[in-house]
Length: 391
Ligand SMILES: *[C@@H]1O[C@H](CO)[C@@H](O)[C@H](O)[C@H]1NC(C)=O
Ligand SMILES: *[C@@H]1O[C@H](CO)[C@@H](O)[C@H](O)[C@H]1NC(C)=O
Ligand SMILES: *[C@@H]1O[C@H](CO)[C@@H](O)[C@H](O)[C@H]1NC(C)=O
Image 1 (spheres, protein in one colour):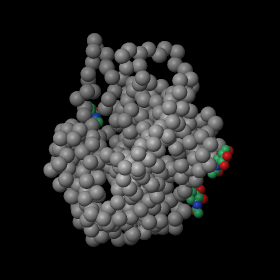
Image 2: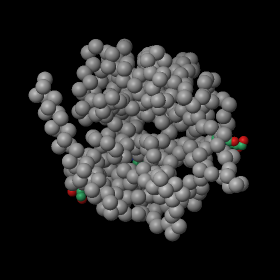
Image 3: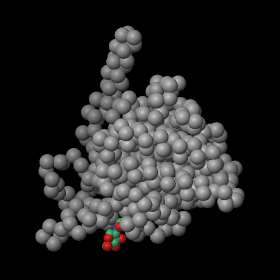
Image 4: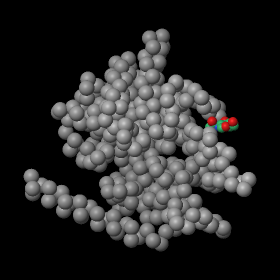
């Protein structure tokens, strides 16, 4: 036991070496676009950039990782299409979205504050989150054009989203800021109940559901996973992280009556654990801690599998749960240990967590304003993701 522990300590040290190396090489950063009048109004926080900043790409030289020259991809990522799997099934994206309109009119000396500019457009806080939501939809409409998007929201908010194949679905609940993640699980449960009710009347194609954060870009087809792994009820994404190996930003549910019922029961268990154990956790973390709690409470569950990269299936409280690696299904630009291996060529989802939302909008603009394709855009993300941005 002791030996094993000191070995892993040693291993961790070795794993840190490339990190130090990479940071040392971040200093001569390359600015993609020069702004003539860059002024930092907040001198105390100079590290958050208001424009794209490119650093070195991680995973350089690794044979199965994306290789880049500038923002030109040397490998084409293995793009798949919804029609490749010969499956008639549809995938529906469901995202929970609540925004606060109170900041809209915050003005100092008659001028709006908190404005950020991306490309030719300036956004206040609410407009920023609306822009993220719209870009989330844009990516889906490019990579999975058959997919519908459903936005679960507060009946009190009037989301100005009028898009083809997008439905706003209001759900009664408590939308105060510190209860948002709790409300999100409640909304997922309420939504699955409605789907179950309607299902007996529905004929034809199976509709699978993928519940995601709205700060993700779907960069490849996701329909295949339902055929490739044919016997799961719901799917979660994992990474090698001791405290929070599961990320709640991507949860897939098989659209059969059985799958929906079991996923609903699973969410109800997560909700119960969240309400009883993690209400004091910071508002963004409670659901992930509850998710992990439910999974590791299964006596036979072996958490060591989170240290590997392969997908696996396990029974959790009566549901067959597929665990998918974050590196492919929930890839976040490099941060912390374990993320320095670059970008797999078959990456399907990029998650712009934390201070990376600007990069999500910039990536979309890049894809659309140039002759670049998705692989090139992934190079931009790979090189730029280490930077912290202003929103
Ligand atoms: C990706 O491109 C690099 C550079 O051209 C090449 O060495 C590598 O073999 C390619 N990888 C794959 C999987 O094609
Ligand atoms: C699948 O769709 C893509 C893009 O819409 C198209 O280029 C391709 O030819 C289609 N493949 C088949 C087998 O229909
Ligand atoms: C915010 O309020 C304005 C004015 O009432 C309204 O036009 C807009 O649609 C609202 N935005 C959101 C996201 O609710």
